[in-house]
Length: 422
Image 1 (cartoon, rainbow, N blue to C red):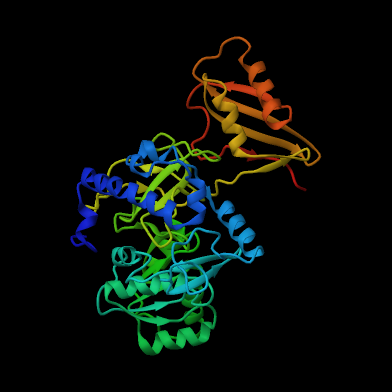
Image 2 (cartoon, rainbow, N blue to C red):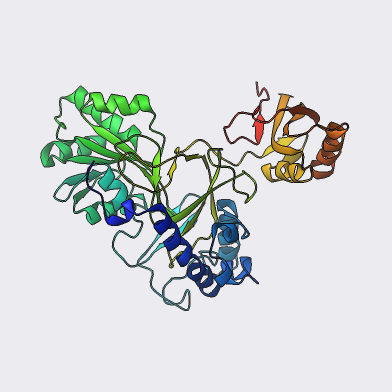
């Protein structure tokens, strides 16, 4: 591929990093001043000092569960439905207006949309998927309640595409529209695209005008991508959320996902805010440079890892492996909840330990825990001291297994529930 959505994609990495870090203090100060939630969460923080990744790691991670809890509490009290996270609203809600639309995601969580073209920055991903000005894109994401349809449609418009708002369901009517309008590409979930193709083959409807696809919202494994290719459709994935917009997108190189230009992404150890070494799997934490909805260190709950090097297409931003599972691995053992953050606390109390994995085995009501530890040194009595720490932190007993560095799998799991539920 020799062309790009814009010049930002091929900036020197040092230039990009400098620009992101230069924007960070203003974003933090704006979030403190204009949103009640971050005014509280970042109380006492001097925004001007948050000008590096090292400084950013000193701020708390706000996970989606906390955002939902704050929204629920605020709504129950008859106050701000956004839980104090939005800097924009409408007359009678906040002291400022500026909201263009508001959406509801499962939870429910409410997300604001402000003014501006390509508000969620999706054009970059759609362009990388091969869509071009003058194309007709058939969009089968929901246009009802949730923002997915609007996210994708505004991105397609930024590229210069016309769109058909198919939405979800109504398979026969959507096939009729495809046959009669002859769109160049499809935007939606991979599973619905597969349904459309199979239904078209079953009924003899011609949708062969569709030669490319931008899919998201669920996994699209290589086997399904290859099946689409066998049907004449080149499919690309992107990673986006209703809270953040675009986070990362696939390119023709098919080597991970390139980060969007409008976000700062960290990979942290699940249950903590501590960045992991490059290449290690951890939770995706995103700071978005959206002043309307300025989420600072937003924990997505998704697992991924940074890939080394840059994309062969010439895009110079960092790449991640893509979605690798969920970071929230909380389990209940003998009536007690055990969280990844507790495992991290245990590790912090023992400098010899570098990584840990808590394995829960057995059957429900007769389960047992084994804490597997990678230890750079194994002095006498370490296992017993760690066992005492486990009891102190979790109120539960655990076996301790000491391992050499590099023994645990690099899959982001801090807690593995290996119990039998039969």
